[in-house]
Image (cartoon, rainbow, N blue to C red; front, side):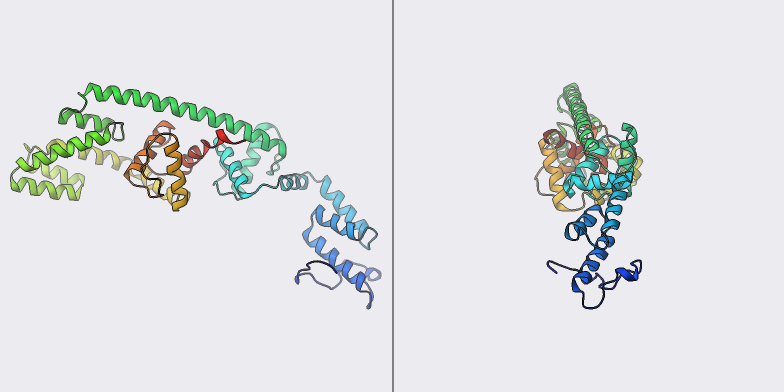
Length: 350
C-alpha cells in the first residue's frame, strides 16, 4: 500500500461481506482493497467512495460504491451539505456569514466562526425568507444573496447612525450655546446632566472641578472634610445626608447633580449589569478590545489609546456609538454592538 493508513482502520473483513468476497490468506492485494473499502464506508462521503473507485474500478465493492454515490447525490439534505462543503468556507468566512445573518435579523447565537445549532437555525430561517428549501446548509446562491443584502443593510445602518450623530452633535452644540457656553456653574451642570458624554463634557467637567476646588478652599474645615468623605463614598445616601447636614453648602449643587446621575444609573442597573456580563463573552480579550477601539476611532468617536484597555474615554465612545446606532446605551460591548461595529467593514468587502 502507498500513503497513510490510520491504525484505527481494521484489517478484518466487514461482517456484511459475503464469505465468497472475503479474501483468502495469502492475498495481500485483496486485503488492502478490503481495508480501503472499510475506510470509505466509515467516511461515508461521495468523495470517499469515488476514491475507492479510482483505485479499484472493478473492485469487489464497486457496485456498492456506485450505488452509495448515487444515493448521496439524490438526497437533498446530503446534496445541500455537500454543496456547502464545496464552498470551502474558512473560519473567518463563517464569521462573516454569522455577522451578515445578524445584520439581517437572523440571530446565529454568536459570531465565532462555528456553525452550531444557532447558526443552522439562522441559515434555515434566511432560506425560508427567500422561499428556498430549508436545509440549514448554505448554497453558493444563498451566500451571494446574503452578502449582497447584508452589505445593503450595513450601508443603511451606517447612514442612519451618521445622521443621528450629526443631529446629536447639532443639538449638543446648540444646548452648549444656550447655557452660556459653560460660563457659570448652573449652566455647566445643566449641560452635563443632558449630555454626560457630549462634545463639551470634558471641558465642562474640568471647569466644575475648578469651581469645586475653589469652593473647598472657602468652606469651613468641618464641611470640607465631610464633603471629601462623601465624594469618596459616592453613594446616594451619602449625598442626601450631606445636604441635610449643610443645607446652605456651596457643594450642594454638585451633590444634587451627582445624586441625580447615580439614581439614573440605579434605574438602569439590571441592563448595565447584563451588558457587562455579555461583554466578557463578546470582547473578553485584549485583541478583540483593541479591534473595538480601532472601529470606534475609524468612525471618529475618539476612544483614547488603541491599546485594548477600556478606560473612561473608551466607555464614553462606546456610549456615543450606541446612541447613534439606536442601541441600548450601556457603555459595554454587547453582541449587538459588536455586530454593528464589525458592519463598518462590510462596506469595504469585495
